Amino acid sequence: ELIIVGGLCVLFAFLYTTGPYPLSYNGWGDVLVIIFFGFVPVGGTYYVQALTWTPDVTVASLVCGLLIDTLLVVNNYRDREADARSGKQNIIVRFGEKFGRYFYLALGITASLLCLRFLSEGHFYAGLLPQLYLIPHFFTWKKMVRIYNGKKLNNILGETSRNMLLMGVLLSLGLLLGWELEVKITGLALLTRQDINSYTLLTTYYTLLVTYYTLLVTYYLATHVFSYGFFVKFDDKIN
Image 1: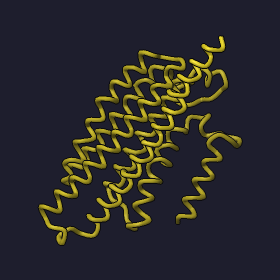
Image 2: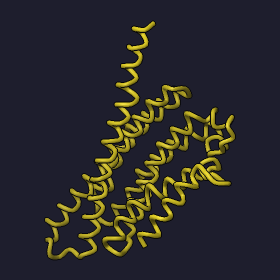
Image 3: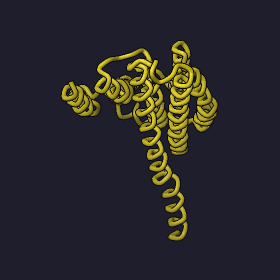
Image 4: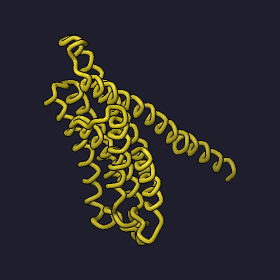
């Protein structure tokens, strides 16, 4: 099964930008991000260890996929005019700038609201803490709309990465707090194996997710903020 999943990842990575029907050029980029950055890493990690699938895993997978898609949306929003000239038909080119701005906002809102599903399973913290993500997400969206176009939208990529990091921290913390609370209330011996697998694997994944986005934000700062400032000063000295 892992070989099949790995093969599909390689295949779609190739088809994303190459072949007779490049998927990213024909509006399939967002769907692929949700699948291969949401369901495959989150659900796949859970399934290969627990050999089962739960509603919580579906929600966590979708939340992750939607959040990561906000990065793709910012990228496509920034490049929409160049993409249109080159014939790239992603959904922002197809439906326009106004659609793109509200699509970005809707992705983050949907991801946060999906976390409320955890409340039905008694995971109080995992349902409510991620709602704090909406605050920076909304302000980043407002800034994106105000900038509208140009290289300054690169800053929105950095802010979006930061917001994703925040969501990873909040959901990880929520799951960990929920796990600790449930152990205190019911006792470890009364928890089912599925409960233990669910909390352990989901918190492990989101811990890795936090680490990944820490590196992502660090990379962005190094390549777009500090290096940019250095080269601006360097150019000023030459001129």
